Amino acid sequence: MSRLPRGGAVENRRFRINQFIRVPEVRLVDSDGSMDGIVKTSEALAKARAKELDLVEISPQANPPVCKITNFSKFKYEIEKKEKEAKKKQKISHVKEIRIRPRIGERDLEVKIKRAREFVTGGDKVQLTAMFSGREMQHKDLGVKVMDKIKESLADVAEPEGRTSSMGNRVFMTLAPKKNLK
Image (cartoon, rainbow, N blue to C red; front, side, top):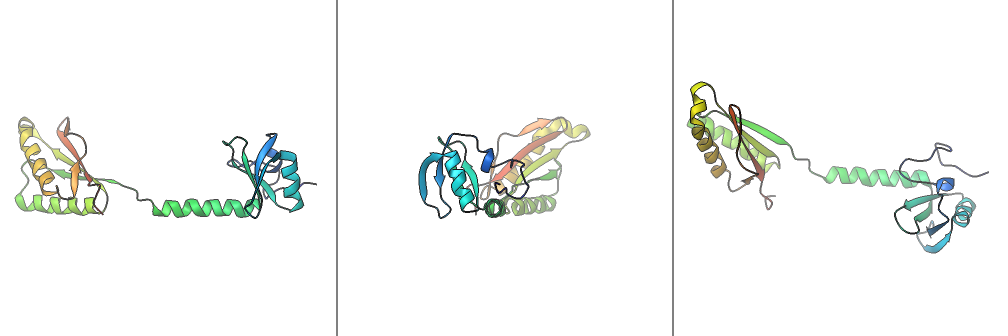
């Protein structure tokens, strides 16, 4: 009777194991890491059963596919551990929004610039949104001037991403951290 990994006879979604490997030949890696070369699948499965381990298809795209004799539960655990470690190391960038008005006060503008600098140095993108109401709509250039002032103040840490765009009563600009910024 063949030994099945935990989960019984159900095929694993990511890796084919034991009797679910349906190719005639495989490139076999032994449990100690040595290459056994190209062997028939039935022969590789017999070797795995003799060692009371599983035959796991590691690289199905290769010709012939690469299979390893290993304990499937331990193999799966190590893969999940590597993925978790890789996920920990990646930095997820968020887009933070800062809203301004065209008639913003000087001190208020300094506070917005300081906040935008914190976001950018933290690795996040900043979307500046200038909002207009009433007669301000006729003077969108004032809002763009305020945005340009912010862009110049943050030039040492951020660079504009794309062009300034307008939609309805708002004007948008996105600033991204500079590549060489740590």
